[in-house]
Length: 342
Ligand SMILES: *[C@@H]1O[C@H](CO)[C@@H](O)[C@H](O)[C@H]1NC(C)=O
Ligand SMILES: *[C@@H]1O[C@H](CO)[C@@H](O)[C@H](O)[C@H]1NC(C)=O
Ligand SMILES: *[C@@H]1O[C@H](CO)[C@@H](O)[C@H](O)[C@H]1NC(C)=O
Ligand SMILES: *[C@@H]1O[C@H](CO)[C@@H](O)[C@H](O)[C@H]1NC(C)=O
Ligand SMILES: *[C@@H]1O[C@H](CO)[C@@H](O)[C@H](O)[C@H]1NC(C)=O
Ligand SMILES: *[C@@H]1O[C@H](CO)[C@@H](O)[C@H](O)[C@H]1NC(C)=O
Ligand SMILES: *[C@@H]1O[C@H](CO)[C@@H](O)[C@H](O)[C@H]1NC(C)=O
Ligand SMILES: *[C@@H]1O[C@H](CO)[C@@H](O)[C@H](O)[C@H]1NC(C)=O
Image: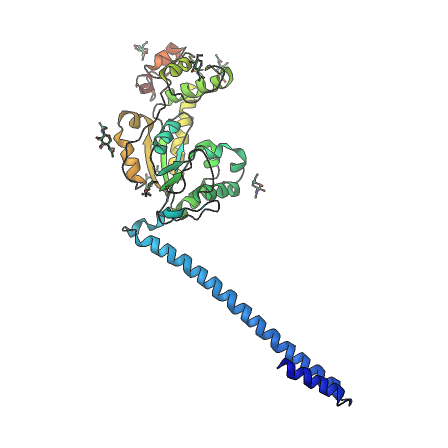
């Protein structure tokens, strides 16, 4: 066709030189260009269309095939099939992943609890990721961090990634959690994140641990290094040699504040799927750990940790001004804290 036109135009140029001819020629070229343009455009569009639809269709098929393995339909909102940007899940691409967060307070056994969780072959608990200040600057940086940890794109020493069946981290109440609770609860409920509360009943013991830990941050009792957790009874007794003195003026007020913070968190996060644990119950009764694995719908396994408790034995041995503290708390609702042994 192009040749014909060429000949034709040549012919018309050479053979017929009258005035009308240039206009006709221009018309033919314009029409030809238009037809070509429309044809090229339509082919391109068609190609991109089929490409995107087939891509969408593929994703749907993969998700549906993965879901075929799920026997319990009610669990679907809690199951995720992450597609990390940083690596390929390979043969475990169809293993569902559950999302969780351990909400706790400092010195409540959450470090120990996390080492227990990470001893399970299918759990990655990524530590205190919001101790990094930039990650909790505002709600958008919080949500971005949550997206990356739950998409398995955040690397920590606890990352197992390829075959993880549950991924999470621990989050202290004072790390933006209460401040941005609205956005976080909404995110948790949209994504089906399961919440594990871990609190300590004996707030007086917690207080001793907080004071001693912050003292060690400066004093560095173990060979000049600061240790929050220890792995041998010798190290534990070295750290426990320091006996804090507790200012009794504000003792009751401070205990009350700790109590209120925990109740507040339970209220704010009440609409999420959650489980509430107490450190003391976990210490006394290891079968409670089985409840945690059931809650996360993971295969039962014996969990273990190398961590050793720092302040063991009666509390009176760990507080310098014990008589004052005893007098202050006797007869109050906190009296039982004086006696309990863990
Ligand atoms: C949130 O914090 C991040 C990180 O510090 C910052 O880059 C971003 O501009 C902040 N966004 C808003 C909306 O303040
Ligand atoms: C747990 O991990 C093992 C080994 O990586 C893997 O074979 C298994 O499929 C995982 N289990 C679940 C429930 O994902
Ligand atoms: C501290 O030093 C002692 C004696 O030199 C040693 O046995 C111990 O392992 C050291 N502890 C740490 C945490 O380095
Ligand atoms: C205890 O705290 C109160 C109030 O902050 C303060 O006035 C007082 O000096 C403190 N007592 C001691 C012994 O540090
Ligand atoms: C959470 O909600 C349930 C039912 O709505 C209610 O019975 C329970 O008291 C609430 N718990 C807290 C801690 O607010
Ligand atoms: C230990 O915990 C399990 C599960 O929560 C419970 O059924 C059992 O009664 C507890 N045992 C004791 C001695 O408290
Ligand atoms: C855990 O250990 C106990 C005792 O060592 C054993 O009886 C039990 O079968 C173990 N459970 C699992 C799930 O391995
Ligand atoms: C606290 O003080 C009372 C009265 O002084 C005493 O009887 C009790 O044994 C003390 N409690 C502890 C745990 O030391």
